[in-house]
Image 1 (cartoon, rainbow, N blue to C red):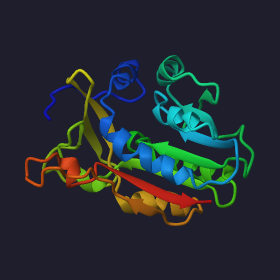
Image 2 (cartoon, one colour):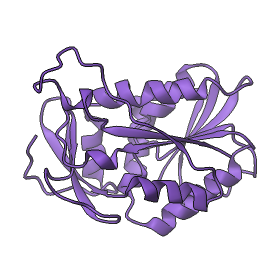
Image 3 (tube, one colour):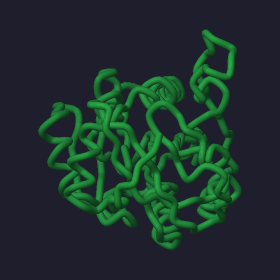
Image 4 (tube, rainbow, N blue to C red):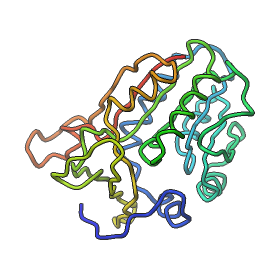
Length: 246
């Protein structure tokens, strides 16, 4: 997967329009089922879940579609939210603009679960992410899960069928800006700006906010063909899912 495009920032209208057409097959197979499975263990009817950094609403729609969750879907991008409201309206979802840092309208211990998918990698500001993680801990009920799904830092430079996070052979350290090539549904690509963080840095966001150290899952696809020609996602996890509890 090769792209010479100028990387797009996530706070741009152009990025939102391109992201609307992103090829989500790997995320749909490797992130969504794991998230739904973990959240199915939460007891009680009509639970309140947060989809933080909801983008175009793909995860929120999955949660609302179970009939068990009322979802507040939050994003700092007006353009992303406009697409989400148009493409994925649902009576159980409320889409809301927020600053990426604070959740002042939510009371302490008032949320049954929080999900944050492919968000930390898009934000260059560690202080903002630290503040957001503290806020997530504050609003979660005791024992409620927080699922943080993101790009697998150990897979930087690997060309997967729908994305490549970083340049092949490059070595990245915490805070480095990384070009990420995403495949669109028509076969073209977009290049976005992401930011590298090690697994230890992700852990520290959680533990410094008072959350327990997470379990780490690295999902891959089953390999029908064990040869080297098999897709990279059958050997290496493109994404990771971190699970912790308030």
